[in-house]
Amino acid sequence: MTTPAQGLHSHVLAALGLAITAGEYPPGTVLRSDELAQRFDVSRTVVREVVRVLESMHLVESRRRVGVTVLPIAGWNVYDPQVIRWRLAGSDRPRQLRSLTVLRSAVEPVAAGLAAENATPDQCRELTEHALGMVATSRGRRLEEYLVHDIAFHRVVLNASGNEMFARLGDVVAEVLTGRTHHHVMFEDPDPAAVTLHVQVAEAVRERDAARAEELTRQIAVGALQELDVLAP
Amino acid sequence: MTTPAQGLHSHVLAALGLAITAGEYPPGTVLRSDELAQRFDVSRTVVREVVRVLESMHLVESRRRVGVTVLPIAGWNVYDPQVIRWRLAGSDRPRQLRSLTVLRSAVEPVAAGLAAENATPDQCRELTEHALGMVATSRGRRLEEYLVHDIAFHRVVLNASGNEMFARLGDVVAEVLTGRTHHHVMFEDPDPAAVTLHVQVAEAVRERDAARAEELTRQIAVGALQELDVLAP
DNA sequence: GTGATGTAAAAGTCGTACTTTTAATCCCGA
DNA sequence: TCGGGATTAAAAGTACGACTTTTACATCAC
Image (cartoon, rainbow over all chains, first blue to last red; front, side):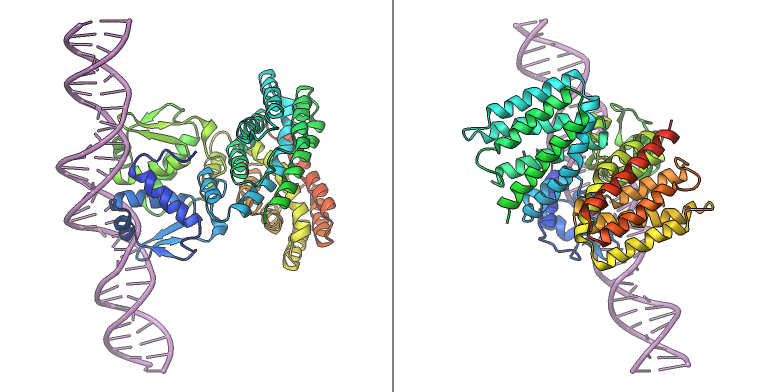
């Protein structure tokens, strides 16, 4: 689940990225690169590469004669899967989970509608398979197996939409679903209504009924949001 | 509009990023870092930092004994504003513009609905101001002035939604609107219907009518997509 | 043909020396 | 006392060269 982290670079990047996104260094904090080099026991070269990456995510800004300044959250590249993973691992997981779920509730219904128009027969088949997989694993504390099908289902929908921006949200959805399963922001067994809805979405897509696919997916999203309201503080 | 590009790093990054996103190096192409250093007349240090950033965008992958391999488009961080700008500047602008507009059509209506619930009085005022600004500049080839209000309007809506994921799409929307204006994927004067709709959205938000704000914004989105269908090849 | 072994090519890492920018200080005159 | 221009030094930016590590590929033995 975590990054392979082979190589000094990955290690330092993960450490710093996590620390910053966790709010360990509040915006405005300045870090000096050779101080960082010393702290992580790596050369300045490695630190510089890490800083450059963090800079491209707008987590920090490096200025001469000043140092590496942590930037305000408002500018962060919150769509970067790496950043998402760090934030979900950190302290503000609840907030993060909510805002991502709201994003899902906007995107996925439209994606499902498009999927109904564009899905290949193969994708329809996969969809049905995973929906049935969800049914099969929806009872008896089999959340891990259920999760696999759930993720796959939504990924296929997003891919089948034919829109690359939607398709790229597959990873985000995967992170959200994994996050809420592993942190018990979910009922012990999946909501049966949600399971049924997934099966119906697969049906609607297969029958090329875009409006129905969209509406059903919207209901799934509403349900997910409500579940979050109930279970998240 | 373009990056400040001070420093060797930014220069090389822009050059390479543009070239790759433009498809100048098809996926699978391998580049050697010291070859790049020579080509751009910079040290390997600088090239390495650039490669690390491109790697974090999943545009390339660097492997020992192999080199820097260009990755398939499917994995690119297409939500990175930097990547978006490069792609909009490159050859597949039409495709890019379309997929981003579809994304907008999914997100903005929901954002507008939330804005109606969460907008501060200040944001309501700004919204009205920009809507009126759009009316005032909607006739007589004043597209540049219109564009400023249009961008500001949508940015306020996204910010007022109170969802950080939506808020961060402000830059994306700005790029899309700028792109379509500057590349004539738009009527010579803005569609009067669209202008009216913006005024009505401002109204709906002011009156806390979420459903109406959402529906009106959906109509704006539909209009934008149709305009794209008509004017893009 | 298959599997072990060797080799070299490329990135990864490090240390150091130097350059450039620029925040902060100092100094001087009004 | 205050303001502004010159000075200083701190930090990042850049370059280079040496060394390490991984690993694709070729070679060889069986």
